[in-house]
Length: 250
Image (cartoon, rainbow, N blue to C red; front, side, top):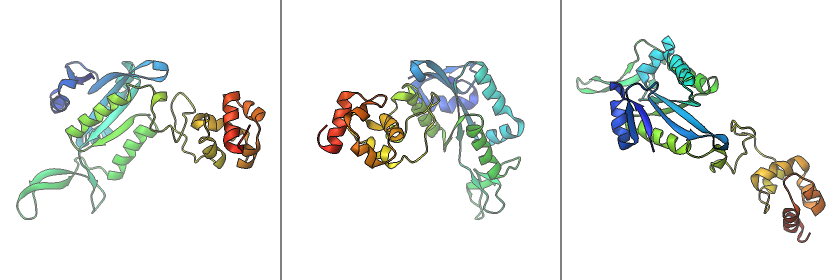
């Protein structure tokens, strides 16, 4: 595992948290970058920007993060990620974005207290910006509480991108990517497809073909070997197994 990290002073704690996994680079164009694998085993470059709450709020106001994202694209990066580090909350009084800072509490003791970000920003605006980054700009956004959690997220990102998208198993029971971009189909499958995916030799991928062919479970259960073989991806052996499962004999 190799993570190339910016050696700027504000990233030293991150390099320390990553330990031997981090290779500091004085002129890196982003906070962290590493190589990975995309569709069809094609190589890709992943760029990760790490922003603390105050710094990100400044970026919202001056557009600096979007400029950094453009630089990453110009440098040939294929995937852009943002890790937003630090705790925050909406003020219970006026909805302003607040962060915990050390100060004097109401008892006159030094403790962590919640203070509004300066310059002031509504919490809703902060959340909207993060949503726009993922929805409109295609940037993956993560939240972490501290530098140790940031390091853990970076390690998990590296692990994720070492495997081509079509070999990830976590979502295979729920979807098949309809395009090379890997978009998840967040549509509840019909009864025919849910039944077909349980048939020996069919599975989730071919169940989509089956669901497009049969209108009802009754039609599927009454189909013969020849009709099953008429569907793309289903041969004689699979068709016979399916009919045997549904009817008792081919």
